Structures are given as structure tokens and as C-alpha cells.
Length: 445
Image (cartoon, rainbow, N blue to C red; front, side, top):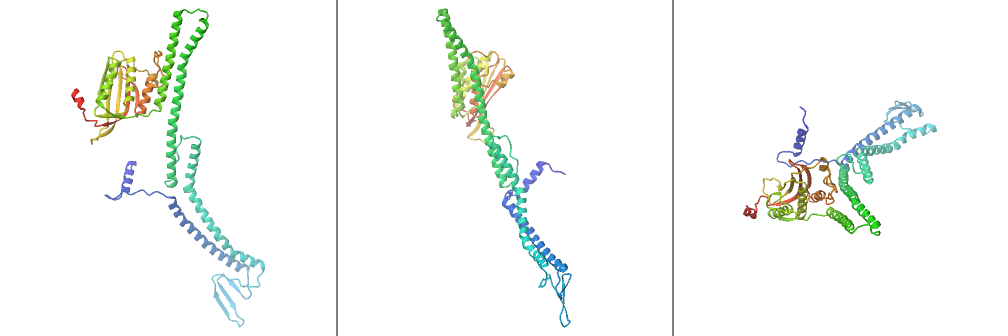
């Protein structure tokens, strides 16, 4: 029966744990030093075997050459093993030699030279063979352990130098170079995330500046047209006092519009560099402040708050987002606006003094809702849908709210509810005693 991947992993993890009740077995990592230690005995064995082969081959070559090409007086070689010598008195002497020894003083020059070459060949061949064994071992070690990691790291360094970070390093063996590759991969991923955030910020600022410059054309064009008209007709006295005052009022309106734009841009710049300053706020006090904002902005606002204990958050940023969302919802609501604020905490079987949570603000209106294009672009800077081109609306409210939510570790989402549009803002918070009911809340109830 074939094992599945999970079963094989479970078996492998069980083998690594060792015996029941014992310590888990650590996975032994490969090491370049250990691999090199394994290669050295192979090199030594090859060198030893080759040296023996060269020595034996050289001895056989000497025997063969002496048997076939060299003769001594009164000496005869039989198969290079037995020597027969006849003394002057006629006695024959037999002897066994392991290798023939050349002792003749009457041999010619060429035969002696060739014999010496054969004898000294092993002096050259043995060191040469040892060098070959060492070189072969180094080549195999490089090919198996070093070539691929060095190539991967070199290619990665070249791509990083060219600011190309959208790649992933090829996996290599689990040794020192493999861990170096893992470090390179972490560095590349960190650089990619940092550069991606910087690129997104630059693109966001480019779009913001482009939208700002586009919207500035209208008031500047209007002011330029009124200025040229006044320059042409005022000296001639062709403009009445009432018309002149009307033109000046319109010009002042456009100037106020420019001032509002610059203030909005300045606030956005500050928000991009803003760091939230959190502090502990009682849930009941926060509820009273949110309810007060709703009472000031309109009468047809229903506000509900679900939460208790003490919350750690940036209250000023929360109130700014809350006010912007409620004011934005009132522009589209027909009869009423529903605002729901609730604190969501992590469920835990063990009570904790402090726990992470999310404060959620949901604003629902009974208006026409969001169009598909508005759902996609309503949080972009200076975006205004059809019928929203009035001068008092800059298209920055939802963008500022999204920016603040992201700064506070949350998000801003748009959707269509049952009757109209629904905007949900989330803030990352810390809750202290989230299940503890405040005494003021008990008294109020």
C-alpha cells in the first residue's frame, strides 16, 4: 500500500522523535567539511592502487625488455624467473630471482638507455598519478558541492545589483552554502518588500500630484479669465459696480477653493509621515464622544456601540475617521443613517488581562449605493463620481480615512448593503478587561 504525503511526513516525524519519552532527534545537517573528509579516503585509495599498479607494471616491463632484447655472456634467462650458470669446472648452478638484475658491462648504449628509462618511469608516473587523483577529487567535490551554489549566488548578486528583485533563488544542498543561499533569499525578500512599499508610495504620490494638478486647472483658468476680463473692461468703464462685485466674489470663491486644496494636500503629506500615538481610553467615554459627534452632525443618525473595558488606540485619528465617514454618509442618505461601532476581540478559553482586538466602525445609508466604478476607485485621491463635481467636494474624504486606517493597522472597505452604501473602517487595538462591564455603563442602564 502506498503511503500518502501526510502519512510519510508523520512517520518521518515519528522517527525523528526517537523513543517515547525521549528527546526529539535533531536532523543532521550536511557539512562541506564532512563531505571533504569523505572524499579524502577515496583519493588516498585511488592513489595507493595506482601506485601499486605503476610499480608492478614497471617491474614487468623491465623483465620483458631484458628477456627479449638483452643477453649476458654465460647467462641465459628463462621466462624471467630462473637463472642457470655453468662454472668452469662444469657444475651447473640454478637460482630463482624475483626480477632480473642487469649486471653486464658489455651491453650496448641503446639497450642500457632504454632499460634505464623503464626503470625510472615509475619515479615520474607515481607523483603524476597522485596529482591526478588529487585533481580528480577536487573536481568532483567542486562539481557536487560548490559549482551550483556559487552560480546561484553570483546570479542573485548580479540581479540585485541591477535592482531586479522579482525572482527566487534556486534551492541548493543543505550545507553552509545552502544556509548562505537562505540568507541571500531573506535579504532579497526584505529588499523587495521595502522597495515595493517605496514604489507604491512614489506611485501614490505621483497619482496624487497628477490629480491635484488636474483639479487646479479649473480654478486657475477661472481666475485667469476673470483677470483678463477685468484688465480689459475696467479701464474703459464698461463693467457696472454690481457686476464687478459679483466677479470679485467669484474670484474670492476660487481663491478659497485653492486654499482648501492646499490645506488638504498639506494634511495628506502629514498623514503619510504620521505615527499613531495610542493611549488607554474607556469604552464608555469613547461611546459618549461618538454619540456627541452624531448629535452635532444630524438628527437622523442612529448610533450603536458594542464594547466594554478599556481600549488602547489613537483616539484623535479614530474621531477624525468617524466624523468623515458620518459626514460623507449624510450626503447620500435619504432619510436615515445607521452607525454601528463594535469591539471585536480574540476568543480565548483562558481569561487574559490584555488581548488584541479590532474596533470596527460601520456606516450604512439608505441612499443609491456605490456604483461598480465607485467601489473600485472611491478611495483614490480626488476621485469624484458622476454628479459629485460640485466645488465643495474634493474627493479626499475616503482617501484620508483609508490612509488613517492603514496607519492604525486596519483597513477601509466599501460595499453595498440592503438599502444603500456601507463603509467599514477597522482599527487595530488592544483591549484591557474586555469582558469587564464598566460601572458607569451599569448605572446608565
